[in-house]
Image 1 (cartoon, rainbow over the protein chains, first blue to last red):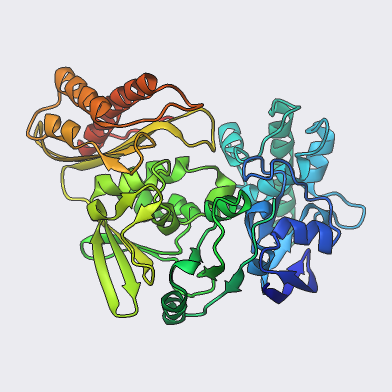
Image 2: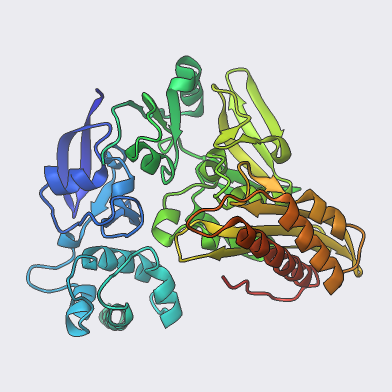
Length: 166
Length: 295
């Protein structure tokens, strides 16, 4: 059995752990770090419920090994809020009712975060394309798209406010 | 589902990776993007005893244009291909393909090299690289060699790399005047494998098709070219009759299996139709028209 000492910066905090070579990133996050906001849905690289940012890019954490994150960064849904202040994406899902059962939500939000960083002013079609790796069985997606539009607008406003004060 | 146990190796250089491969031979699998390998390991369809992770080798993720070809490094991600300006502007067949592979999350990790090394006829790049007449660069203990893409796919999930060789680069010929290409994929939903797909790369001289290659996706046990269909088009000018003849030839020469995506006859007819669409789009692009391939 191959075991490995890893150091991973998770939501800004350095974590040291021992993992088996075969430990999947999602199991490391949920079971060793107890960050259960990252969900396991299909377990077959289809649904995107387990999406996290690995070194800044949204990936399915059920389809990467924990040892691959050694020396890198991982962001999960738990890292988004600043104390009690919600991230614009979380606020968007709240305000626009972007969820029903909520199971897909953390993955949707992490996908959207990566996507909006690359495309801060997307069209509706581009948003639908951006979340096409995340499945939702409740909402029919319309409310999710609206939530991401809300967040995109808010993040653009925040950026321009920052620029104005800088 | 957790993969079987294995020893994990993370070499820091190409030399180290090849030395490991040479030592471990067919006991080892290369881990690049992992988006096919890890699911296969989780389903226990693959149970390698050693994994050689090449993600930590610096300098393998390039996409750059050389004098007469586009060089794609072994660790270039599908998402980089999608975002590459040179690919968008000069390699439309490659750009079409990168957009429709799996989904954005998978493309953030998946690599072009892994897509073809896996030699899955359901993957999309085998067809496009066959159509481009690409070259594969392999490195082993005794040096580097190039493999014509026509000689690369040898069986279902089998390629012509030796056990101690690593795919290091893919070379796509640079476009010449009159070149055009398109990839047309028919899929049930985003993220699924194709019901069928057709890659076409051609050169027009005036109205005449001076060169053409067609690659087919997911309609044969081994990634294939539609050579009969190509011969229906070569030297001809494009007409509805010619397109239909090519479509029918491809439908006859492919070898689809019936599955959840449809029965054999249906898939053959999908290919007939997609060949026509792919050739039409490739020809339009070779004439300098802007074509968005819809899926």
